[in-house]
Structure formats: C-alpha cells, structure tokens
Image 1 (tube, rainbow, N blue to C red):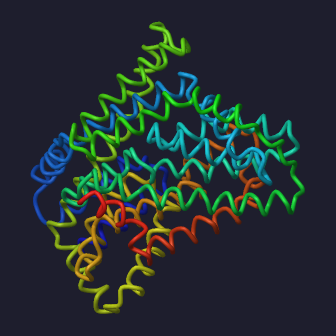
Image 2 (cartoon, rainbow, N blue to C red; image 1 turned 135 degrees about the vertical axis):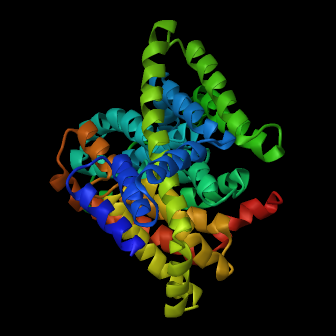
Length: 428
C-alpha cells in the first residue's frame, strides 16, 4: 500500500509540473500519513531532510561547484581546447575529437557536465561550423561528451553516491571512474570518426611537435589541478572535502594569473555557485527523506526479495537494473535518481557479490545517458541552447553517439576490472 501511494503521488506530481524536489518531499509526506498522524509526518520528513544534509562529505559539493564556476570564467576551457586540438585535431573528424577530449579534460577538472557543455560548446560549435561541420553534429558531440566529466574524477555525483550507499570510499570511487570515463570518450571518438567520414567532414592539418609542446605548457597549470586534487586524496594528504577547498584556492590563483577573472567578477561567480548548490542540496535533502521513508516501510527489502525471486543470475539482474535505470534517467535528474534508487538496488547487487564501488560507476554511467535524453535531459537542453539549434534536428546525429554510450555501459557492467582495477592497485 505504502509503495503504491509513494509511486503514484510522485508520478502525478511530476506529471502536473511540480518541481522534482517538491514532488519528492510531498510524496514522502503522503506516504508517512498512511502510517502516522499529520504532525509527526511533517516533522519526521523535515527532520530527515535536515539530518540527510548533516554530512561533512557533502561540503565538497559547494566547493567543487564554485571551482567549476571559476574555471568556466577563467580561460581554462580555451587552453584545454587548444591542447586537445594539438593532440587530435589532425584525425578524421578532427574538431569532433577536439570537442570530446576538451570536454573530458574540462569536465574532469570542474566535475560539472553542465559547465563543460556550456564552456566547451559555446566555443567549439562556432569553430566546427566554420570548418564545415553541421551545427547539429557539433551539438550532439558536445552533449554526449560532456557526460564523461561526471565519471572521470573529481565528480560531485560520485560524492552523492557515496552518501547514498552508506559510506562507499570516495577515493575508491574517484579511482574507479577513470577507465570507464576514458573508455566512453574513446568510443564517442570512434563513432565521431565514422560519422565524419560518412558526412565527409574536413580533417585538420597535422600539428607540429613544437606546437603540441607549446599547447601542453599553456594547459599544464590547469591539468595540474587533477594531480593535486586526486593525488592528494589517494595519497591521504587530505579528504575529498578538503581537496575541494584546495581546488577553489588553486583555481582562484590560476585565473588571477591568467588575468581573466578580477575581483569584480567574484560576486557573480559566488552567486552562480550558491544558486547551483541550493538546487542540489534541496534535492539531496528531499531525496534523503524519501530514502528513509522507503527503508522505514521496508520497501528496499521487498524489492530485493522480489528481484531475487525472478533470478539469482548476475547477468540477468544487472540487465534488469540497467534497463530500469535507463528508463528512470529519461524522467528524473541524476542526483535524486542516485539518492532514491541506490538504497533500493544496492542491497540486491551486494547479495550477488557485486562490489558497491563497481555498482556506483554502473549507476552513474547509466544515468549520464538520461542527461542527454528528452524530456528532462539537462545536457540536451544546454547543448541545444548553446548551439542555437533544436532538439528535433540534433536527434539524428545523437543516436549513434547514444549507441557508443550504451556499449560503454555494457562493457563496464559486465567487465568489473574496468572499474575495480585502479582502486585495487592503490589498495582500496
């Protein structure tokens, strides 16, 4: 009864246009009203929202968001694009590869897919169009490649998964994301190369070694941030939260050196990061209240028993979970999806002997696909807006890139070593 009320009320609220954070909170209250009186229902939900946000690890999110905002304004994107162009610009579909590699680098450094889509897309769409690429293809490449930054660390969504999973190691999750994120980028580049040959898009001139070195030197201070943040976490110099604060200080110093951000720009940057953080934290608080209510009503255990009654085969269960998450990702943003469905599916996969770190990468990589799909795919709307085109026109070049992401998902799902090798090498 409770699960029916929870699901129905949530779906109805979403269908009539209620914002997702409010939909989660209101449906949680409706579900509680079945079991306890009105006043305790409201106070319980409010208390769960507050305690759900009472986590030291969550402090990393506003810091990484702020670091991403600073990088978006600080000229880092242009230097990464120049470096990527020097490396892969001469390959078939060269500028598409530049877009993908630059998005991977910028997304990895900023931890934000939205920042990568807007920063890289605003520059690369015009450049690609001037070189003879279609605007729709440029937008499709930008939309899909921006997701890689959510898997390649540092990543805010991996921090959220750590919270939802009950304390999976953030350092292990960060290390586990490298190979799957790079694999996704490589597969996108393969598809882009075939598409470019099919459409006879131009190929850039081969870059001289001197120019590659020069581009690397210009981009090196930005790339060094990855070494400082991830290296510091893995070696144990600081925690993920402390690393996020270090990232902010490093980005501030770097952008002042580049002279592309002044003290006058800081209020706008801070306000932008506060707005993004407020949205994320409201979603986290509401989702944590729903997760607690599901646990209170024993919903995860019931779902675990039901799924294991269907099959105890890892291949079958992981396929079912992937299909469900792909469906969820079409209608729900990534943060609430991770917070709501991690407590539901994690007990199922752990009973089958699947490592929570491996499952975290599967879940995030899966939900990245949802960010590129209508009707709520945030990256789809950002990419289309930046490119000045429409969703209908972008869908055709987007489909083969979707296929590349699905292939990456299947490989990561059924080859655990892709996620687990690096964490094991470093002793996690």
